[in-house]
Structures are given as C-alpha cells and as structure tokens.
Length: 382
Image (cartoon, rainbow, N blue to C red):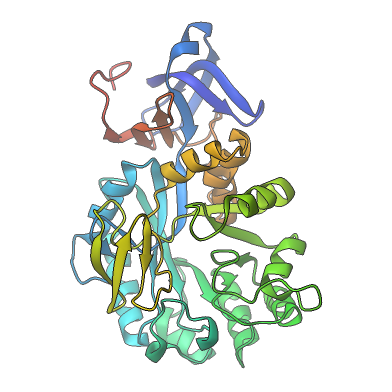
C-alpha cells in the first residue's frame, strides 16, 4: 500500500482537510485518514483533466513525430494533468483519419506521463465565418458519410469529442450520428443563432468549445451561442482562464452563475512550455509574445496556458478553490464518463496532484504511479 500526507481536497467537505490518502497496488484509493499533523503538508488535489489541448513543449497532435504523444503526456504531468484528449485542427479528412489511427495504436501501450483518453476533433465540420485560426481550405461540409470515413463505427470510443457548427446544412444529422457512436459533441466555431444552437442541443450536443471565443456573441435580441451557453443547463462550457481569451470579470461571472457546468481547458498549442517566439499551427505562422499566441492578422491561435497556471490565475481573481477544483477535475471526469476519476475518495483512482503553498506542482500521480516528481525527498516510500 502507498500513501500521501497533506491537506487533501475532499468533495464531501468542499475544503482542504489534513490527512493521509492510501491506495492499493492497483492504484485504487482504499481510505483517507484524518491527521491534524498534516496541516503543514502540501496541498493534494485530484488530477487535472484537459479535454482540449493541441500541443505542448514544441509538439502538436498534428505532427508526424512518432513519439509526440508520449512527450506531450510527460510535459502535461509536470503541470498536474493526469488525463487529456489530444485535439486536432481542421484538416483534410485523410489526414484526420491518419491521426486517429496513429494515436489509437500508440495509446495501446502506456504513456510515461498523463493518460491519453482519446481524441477531440476540433473540426472539420465548422463555420468559415468563425473559423478562428483553423485552416479555411480544409473546412468540410457535415456529412454522415464523411464521419463514417473518419472513424468507422468508433466501437472503442477513441474519438470522444468533436467540435461542430450547428448552423451548417446537415449538421443535425451528423450530431445525431456522433452521439449514436459514442462521441460527445461541442458546438463551436460557429455563427449560429440561438435557435440554431438549440436545434444542435436537441440533436444531442452537450457542450460549447472555448466558450465566448469563435462563436456568435450575446445580444439582447439575438443571444447567439453565448446566450445559449448562459441559459441552457444541458451544456458544458469550456473556459480558457489565461486572462487573454476572456476578461477575468467575465470568468468570475460565469463561475458565479454556472460553476457546475464549467470545464477548464487550455486549448494550448505547441508553444506552451516554450519561450516566446515564432511557431506554426496548422501550417500557419504564429507569434507568441507576452503569453498570447497570434496569427499574423492578430487572431488568437490557441493559447500557451497550462492548467496549473489557470488554477493560480483563478485563485488570484477571487474564484473559490472548490469551484476551480470541480472545473479542473470533477466536471471534466463526469463529462467524459470517467466515473472513477476527478475526486479523492475511497474507490476512486489515485490520480493526484501535490502542490506547494503557492499552488506550484511538486508531484503528479496517475493511478497511484508517480508520473512527475520534483520533490527532493519522496513521501512514504514513493
């Protein structure tokens, strides 16, 4: 049996509780004991889950580098991430099909860092009007035949999530097909009206990609997708908490009104964990300066955010820790159907993040196995 001592975040109390978490040889939490002496120990949170990340450390899901997923998983572990969905860009169907097959075969063996839970296809069935940094020449019409070509029957549910524009002709049929084949659907990169977005929800969509960004804005007579996200309780809403994509005041408003539906994501591209400079995203040049990644025309091109930085940002902006933890872990686990992740409790997997008093990551555990450890002395024989 293995254990960690510190201030453990417990959902049941919505607070940090001094104690010791114990798990067995299979990485399942057996019990949590109260221990007042752990009051001075590190902060222990459930592992972070990122359902929307393109790349990090100079590597990207779209690359042809065979070791990219393992390298990305190690880099993410340094930032407290224990599970992620590798996210594609809009690309020709044959390129996306290649990436689906490559990632599926690579993930058959365990990665050395965070666990790759599958893919998030951001496109190609999006709206050119709100393409953002997505390549316009690869945008495709939503067709069931194209979906079948991309992923077959998706029996293993390797493709877990797709971002689509509900206002494109044929989108409703593709949304229905996706849900029938185990794929969750986010609405995004879309100029959809409120009513067009509502039709997407009725067809089976249950989320919004990088809420507020690359979607029809809020207006008092035409609420658009932003208005739909604010008022539709069936929708999960991804948020990028870098202070660039969304003003901190708006982030605080969303957490205050709908925290139970928030999913913190990074939308990070290859320049995350890298110095400022010139990079590529989907074949387009990107310049990273002062924490923002932009195309030559100024369009935001993903982010260079990490989830531990999002945690620190939100704490600085006055968001309560319980709401942040839910958005980093519990909400994402529920959305993806990972019912034994996202919380620290008996019977759950020991996906854990150890942080210092300033909420810097010291160690990360995936199913009880250390996948990152920067501490000079390991705890309890780990």
